[in-house]
Length: 140
Image 1 (cartoon, helix red, strand yellow):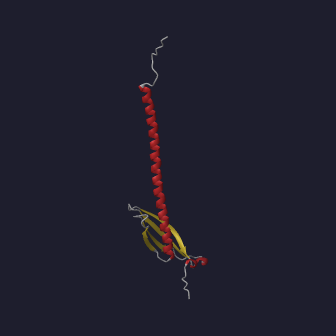
Image 2: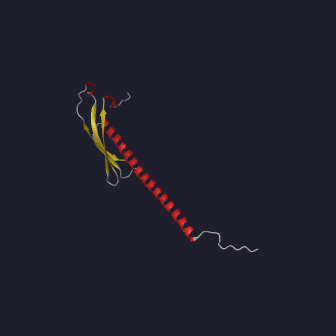
Image 3: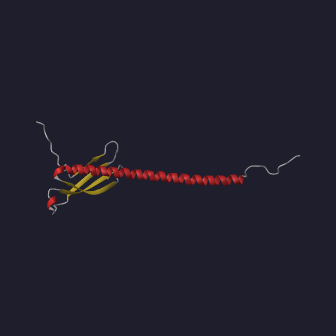
């Protein structure tokens, strides 16, 4: 007995093209999602670095104010080239509370400058009290 098949097994050109269009659409969605996640990660990392450097500038400003330097600035060294900070502090005035007569209050602004020339500022308040002053003891 001789059996002949009139149609052959396999995919038609239309079926292959539909499969490729579906695969291409899925790949487009995945690549687009990956690019969006990468862009968001880079933006977030830049914001975290800026915030960290600004907090370091505040710490330097607080130390400067503690040594009675009411303005100053510097850079962050070779690890962060092009980044610099400055700060400026103003006394807030006398307080009416007798328990706080020997405490000095300051309003300060720390400014971070990026390599692009963009600036970000943070205003904060700090204080000095007699316990914060350091004494140098010499050995005799």
